[in-house]
Length: 330
Image 1 (tube, one colour):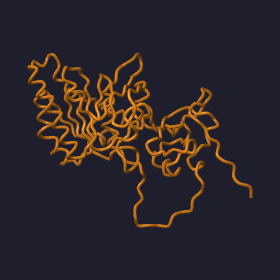
Image 2 (cartoon, one colour):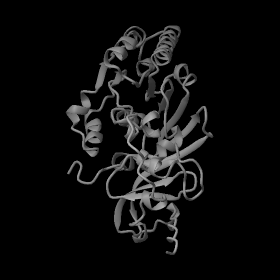
Image 3 (cartoon, one colour):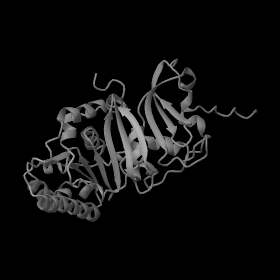
Image 4 (cartoon, one colour):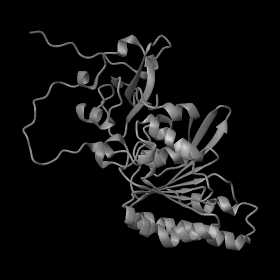
């Protein structure tokens, strides 16, 4: 019997406007080799496991290097599957030890290529991640939903504690993300514990005195401070020394909770204030978001492991519909 013909490799740069089918395309972020094309959304861990954590194109480790996006594909891609790249394997003997994929053991991911390129494909517990700029509110709502997803889907399978410092919470935007993933908005909203603050003193009190207790009570693994210093703008009426004291108290309180409770801490700084550096200077990851025409432009300013400065551009529509399962929200 003649040996089977090797699977032909395809790469992202081969995309053309001649494509007719919309599919979910999984690729290696290192070499852009197409790993899997499927009509339905699949956990990234399935592709990682079936290829034994090795890219067939460049041979690099695939962990934290798999990207997924929805795209119109050429006809030649329609038969690409993760099983085609890997040789058949004997069925392993049954065991009582439960197997867990590598992705299920890792932290939160965006599963949206531009944000993953900036922040990383997996964000570990104990980190603090700051987004600045008016567009940061959209990312905040996205995070509140993604954190609820199972670990196999890149989430944290967690309740989210949201301290809304600037009354920025957008229920309609949050609900739209839930619908696009086929999750009932009411069910998703029940996993977001929201506290609104109307003064900077209330924000500081929530972070310093209440946050640790709420994290324990709900078993939360993700904390989000929305527009955290928004009430320290020029109209706050606070003296400069008092404003700096409150900003420092919030930062120290958040640092203590994320380190002691091993939670992932996100913050957005939407309203620009003279005190922003009290928060941004201590963030593990710092991303600046601003509008450039119809695009949102994100610039990585700080990261413990990734090259910087790094810039990614995307539209709001791309974020809102990047991972839409077929039939969801129709």
